Image 1 (cartoon, rainbow, N blue to C red):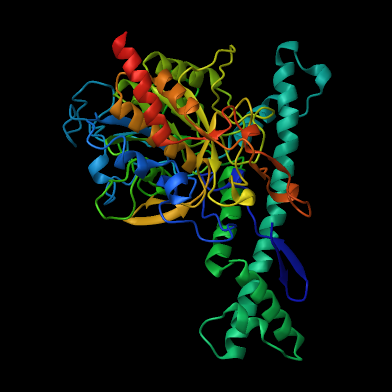
Image 2 (image 1 turned 180 degrees about the vertical axis):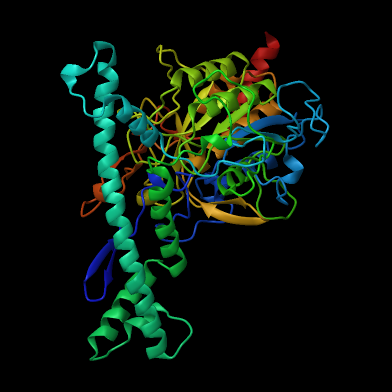
Length: 555
């Protein structure tokens, strides 16, 4: 956590944002706390040859996989949308060959008209799209407030007691969060005004077009306003704060208030479905990019999995024989259970063998619908890979939905829960935002400073368990592609048993915000953060898959 001095100490401002609250996106944006630049292509590199804790993709291709035949694998990306025009993705997209493009007819009679590249469950038949949505906590707060406001525990029917208790907890959290957001927005606004004033003053005082730390530190003036401005700008510049990033933070807080925690905001009329019917299937549109919205997150995820390898453009994804199916179901805000359940079913019914789920939330009112969809996927031999979340929390004690455990206590046997690893020393071994759990998180994968595709032919480094999940999906796709005889549950087993372990490695435990402030970091064994205690690895996974495949062939 960084505190920035503003005009002789008039305002101290915390500029670190919780990754749990981030755009997706409630999620990812550039991770600026690393002490040095990540090695290029680091997530594909190898610990032995490159001395970098990547997943050994390049090593596997150059050795054990060289010359070996493979079959294409369809990976569904349930996300914010994918830029299907991106130069590094357009050759690796799944295309529905049974559908005639843009004829307005459901040619393959799967219930979805013109679903060439996938489907958009948060779009309307008129072409409009849901780009922002509220958080699930907000939606539950609104629902329960109508039911229970003004009532006491003694007046609540026994059948509603559980919901009433949940309402009281949500009410407390929601109202405290809104109050905090208002304060943060006010602070950031004030900081922004003073930052801009200080910058204009120093540009004029130094008669320059650019400011650098050394020059600002050298300013010595009897004018206290100039001296304070120079000190403040030197500190914030040294810590990576720019006017653009400041505006990004301001926009974030404004979006939180306008959309995420706004009790009057409900964009569902755009979709036009019967939202109270969780079993409704056929709604939405075929705009898998989500025009008018932000497809950065989904495009980045797709690139990590499968950006065209060896084309000399941008970057290389993990898997070399993959087709990306884009399913848009995650807005800027919390995804809705009904949409996720339908997205999973669409992926399964249209040939996906892996489903990447880089999203999550703290409440799941229609978990039963999602559970049934996941059980359906497992029954159809489909692997589900889910990002553990970015709250720096122990998932053995707290929940990030969806989960591999269903409401009736059954475990999805083709599920992997993924934490985010980093590339640095003990203090930067894992992402300090990453959720973890000795029972709940299965393994870790690279998820910090991951350089991959973003819309409009661009590339960017982003961080989050949302990046770690697609790295794992890419590894799983390689195993499935080269060893198609393995089931989804067997591929899950291969990835778990072949992780690279660091049994004696003590690393900084994930922690953020006030939990970190003024404390020495807690050091724990890396093996305690997940069930396997290791990092996913292509090379080791392929070796184990080869052994398993031979046993299957021998019967």
